[in-house]
Image (spheres, rainbow, N blue to C red):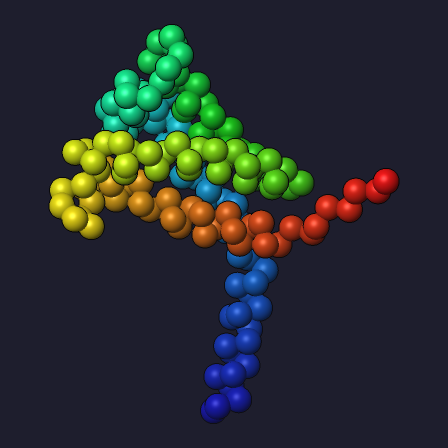
Length: 151
């Protein structure tokens, strides 16, 4: 019985190794494309949070609706790029830029993202869940073959 359990365990682990990157790519695509699309069609619950962050941090004279649409399209593009083999490095760079900006409300908008010490609001939880996206991107990045640049 022990050998049967061990064999089954190895089978499951081998299957997980085959699927880890495709599942991670698909998960990032779904989250980024879907959340971006919600912004494009004007029904994202994150809209007020993005608008408040924009109001506090954007030094350029860009109208918020223009910025918001570009931001949404940027999110959708990140999702799509994660699906394209060979574009993982670009996807991870774009994701890093996006995550660097989306974490800002935790610092700059504590009245919106925290209800107490280490107690996030729903908006704060929405941001903190990005840790899982980082983990999925790390899995994808860890499977890349190092670049070989010939001189």
